[in-house]
Length: 377
Image (cartoon, rainbow, N blue to C red; front, side):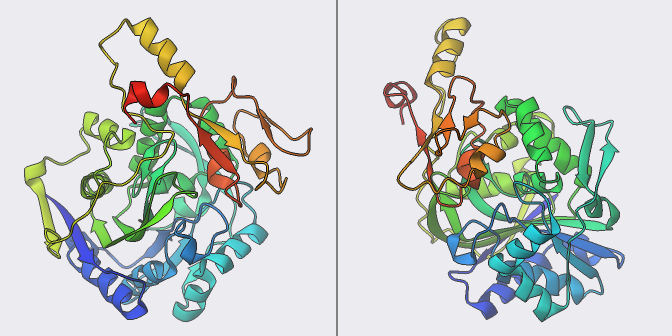
């Protein structure tokens, strides 16, 4: 039996959010059975964004989770490893901008500034039997995935499972992108990370979610929901079902690995959302549904897919020449010789890290003219 909490919360009104988080977590029996210990709330920082940007987990959601566990006697730490260099000074600025410093001051919880990492091994993993993780995530008693519900240019959707990629320290993430640039391989790597961390519960900030070219340059969408669950794979399945985001690689692969619960074993609690009219979320321009698979020879299919995959482009009028895209490109195919980024699209692995991390939204996504006709969108 897997429990999924769905709670309506139409805005970031402080009292309503705290109450909504408590309601979402109250239905999870496994929380009540935890021995008192150290809990690390793994938020979604990604990069230096204000709460109103819709990119990071809203601080009120984080505060609600912190208070819930504190009231049960746990010591709570809040942390993440955003994209780019993993340094205490940068973490401090991220925490301040995202509103988490205020959360720490209000609740007396701890913000993690320990940037040490360690190598770990997991025999049960498929792609990441050996990986490097932020040390503190391996030292606490419990990890809580506290993510943001968003679309994602590489993985279509990011929620409870993808959020845990942040336990991989800073620029090491780029190495993983480079080694596993196949989407299916990367999806399984994300699942391997989630299986190693085994979050005790997962919660998603879906009050203001993101659609389109997420996770940082999409459109804010008022979904008005807080979601929680004891199984991160089931939680992502339900979130994708509500938003009608299809063909999510992590969900498809988790089903293949037997990590999704049978539908009849999902137990819902919280609020009835049958009266809510939720239109399908817009997908990223980089996403396509492959309607040609199995209809033509495999070598022809591979050629079409390889030559018509969307790729990142630079909007020179918006670019401030900060070189963040070049510094964080896993494949190292972005040059700054002209003063503006130039992308070698022939060598691009389409991870869209440049798109995610650009502070000015100056990285766009371009599709081949025939893409819409072939992929129906």
